[in-house]
Each structure stands twice: as structure tokens, then as C-alpha cells.
Image (cartoon, rainbow, N blue to C red):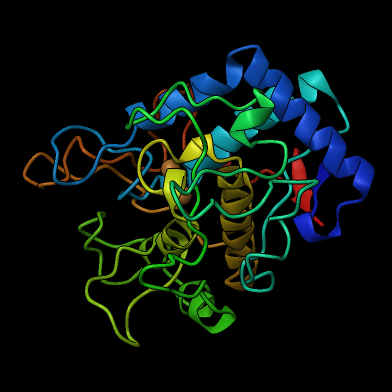
Length: 288
Ligand code: CU1
Ligand code: CU1
């Protein structure tokens, strides 16, 4: 039976407690930091050479889907009632709203050093010391809304610009793809102003602190954000009648993206699975 991933804003007090407790337990065991390290290791940009699987590539969605499933399995080994909640940032748009409460993720970072001082992931609890990072700070940081140069979370209408695109992805299959659901949702549009794509990337920027860059997994909101991105993929498939992952076949030897992206039936490192096998997860979980 498929389990349900719930909206973080609708969790009961007991559900929040169990989710937090399971996270703290895998952190204590060292498992959590392995997820952080893996995300850092797979943070390859399209300016670098080599295979890109997690970002700036068609497999952005299946890579994070499998990454979330692995985290969720680790949590469910601790407590089988736990699933990853999603944060619908089109609805919960304020720093005081879900999931930024003391009984879930805690709130904003303090002014002086952006250190998170409230909730279960505050440094002084001793339960959430940052060990795998791209900077040397040991404490979790946030700058909700980017105080020095304020920005808004993406709106429903902005998200719709991605959900409306009926094509999964287009050449050149990277951060410069000018259309396609994947890059519209990942959000690497150039420039600013009303035509800019305000979606996944903008949410990382809005949270700020640890959520900027390769070590973003250090903030547990990473999983709630990506659960919502994963939900969007699911909704997009339904809206357009089940369109498929692209490219269906690998770019040929003369193509600049040859050997740099994963096609539908190719292996998606570091796992022994294909994007094709991750397109339908209805037998594992669904969104409530
Ligand atoms: Cu990522
Ligand atoms: Cu992300």
C-alpha cells in the first residue's frame, strides 16, 4: 500500500514530533551527513565537464526523487509512520508560517550571524552540528526573505508557467534550455524582471543561509521543498496525460551534451536505476 506524503501545514503535533525525532536520530547515527556529502559531491554545474545528474540536467527531477526516497527509507527504518512532508510555498509564504514553527523546523536565523536559534535544529540543542559543509560554520543558518535585498517566494502563477509547458525538457538539456518543464521548474532563467522564471532555485535563495549551494541538505527544509517539487512533477504528468522524460535516447557523439546527461533508459548515478523506472512511483507513495 502506498503511503502518503502530507502538506507540512496540516501535520498533527504528534506527526511533527515523530518526523523531527526520526531526523535527529539519523543525524545522530551519521546517516544524515552522508546525504549532505552526496549532494555536495553531485553538485556539478554545466560549466564543468563530465556527467551531470542532479542539477542543470534533465535528470534533476528523477535524481531528487530517488534522493528523497533514500532519505525517507532511512527515516522509516527509525519510525515506520514517518513520511517526508511537503512545503507548499505558494500558500505558506511567510517566515512565521509553516514550516518555520518551533515544533517543526524552527524559525529564521538571528541578525548577527544568521544562526538558527529556535526549534529542534538550533545549534545550542547540540543535536544539529553541521559537519559536511562548503563553509566551516558548525551551525545552521537562514535568512528568510533575504533581508538585505528582499525577495518573494514564487507565486502560484509563476509556478504555473512551468506546469503549463507540455514538453519535459529540450536541447541543450542544461541550465540554458529556453523552455521545457524541467528547466522552467528548476529555474535557471537568465535575467530578471517579469519574464524571469521564479520557481525551485528562487526558494533556495529565499531561505538563504545553508540552503544556498551544494550543502543545502544541511537545512531539513531541503526535503520539504523538494517533496513539493516532486509533487509538481506528479501534477505535471497528470495535467498533460503522462508525457515522458526526455531525452528518450542519448545525444550522439557529435553533440556537446554527449556523455554529459542521462537519457530515459540509461543508468542514473549513483544508483542502478533509470529515469524511466522513476517516472511512476504511485505504488510507493502519493501526495495527500
Ligand atoms: Cu539538489
Ligand atoms: Cu533544490
